[in-house]
Amino acid sequence: MKEVNKEFDVKMQKTIDVVMSDFASVRAGRANAAVLDKITVDYYGAPTPLNQVAAISSPDPRSLMIQPWDGTLLKAIEKAIQTSDLGINPQNDGRVIRLAFPQLTEERRKELTKQVKKYGENGKVAIRNIRRDAMEKFKAMEKKSEITEDDRKDYEKELQDITEKRCKQIDELTAKKEAELMAV
Image (cartoon, rainbow, N blue to C red; front, side, top):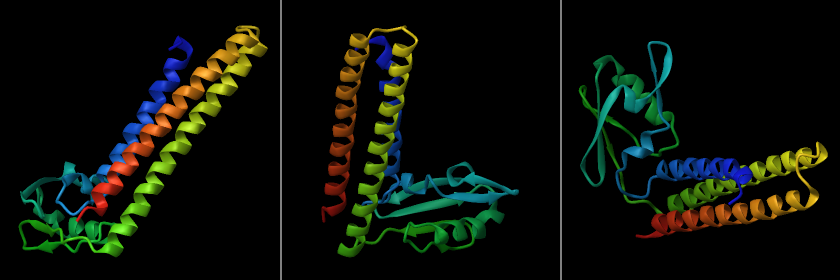
């Protein structure tokens, strides 16, 4: 790989990492603490990620237990979970919050599959935007006579190959997550 394309490949890999993080936040029937990663709680006037104000554990495969370090946060955590798109009603016993993950209905699986496809498509759009920015940079370099037209075409071809590889990677990750969601 040419040195000039390495920086764009690194940016594309970071985009894939974000897509994988988004996929982890979509629950697939089992209790997974990653589904709480995007939930924030109002803590002393600042939105704070839930995992920074509470201990999150999984006592069994179908439930999560959230134990805040500050007991006054119980109501705020409960409210944050209820207003999220998680689709689970928290149970507050005064000390901890329990989340019971029921079996996903067919309708909910389809909704989550659409959400996964959207995350995947957003990732591919971000990768294509990185490619577009790189192409503009190559054209500017050619205009300044830093590279020749042949060099620009070589860089663009290599960049297109990288883009196709990364988009294919996102498609594979999306298909894998969809299969995980649709498995009963």
